[in-house]
Image 1 (tube, rainbow, N blue to C red):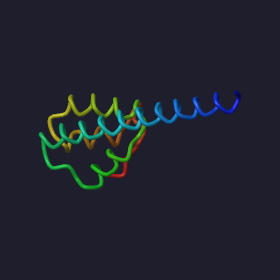
Image 2: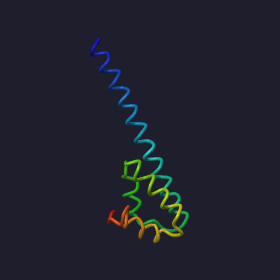
Image 3: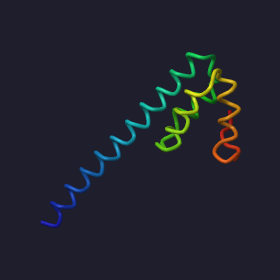
Length: 90
């Protein structure tokens, strides 16, 4: 019985992780699509966005994308990060 419960948990955990990864991937792709509407996205920035898996970070970037009028403006604010901390490599 214990083994059956462990397998069920493992399957449920795998599904949860897969759903979370899918949400992150979808959010990252949406951010890139929005940025591409306002300018050319540097390859390094696009790669970094697509590799990000933290949903809170992606949510912050999505909101930032909507506030920016250009990719350059996004990059300036993106590099500053929350509370003025430098982030990103692009």
